[in-house]
Amino acid sequence: MNYKELVEYMVKSLVDHPDKVEIREIEGEKSTIFELKVTKEDIGKVIGKHGRIARAIRTILNASATKTGKRIVLEILD
Image 1 (spheres, rainbow, N blue to C red):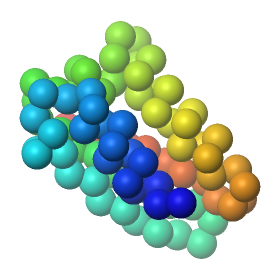
Image 2: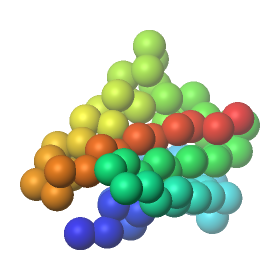
Image 3: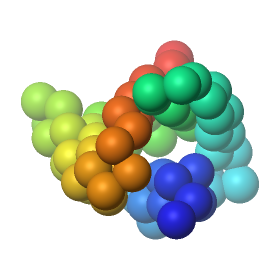
Image 4: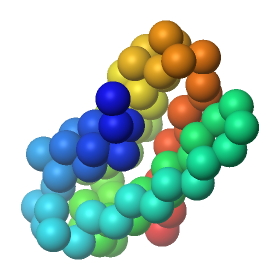
């Protein structure tokens, strides 16, 4: 499974400007970091009230990565 495509699909479904979504993947031995950049107007939609949407995206990523034994980290950049 490609986690980058999963993140991209979920985030592009939430935002008003899906063409401006940028995801950078940093691969490590035991973990993978995804750096997510969206427009200023869309950052609230990705984070959600009290961080609920961001937490839900992270939960889905970690649940899908448990079989591989890797840790997935999602960082939302300004």
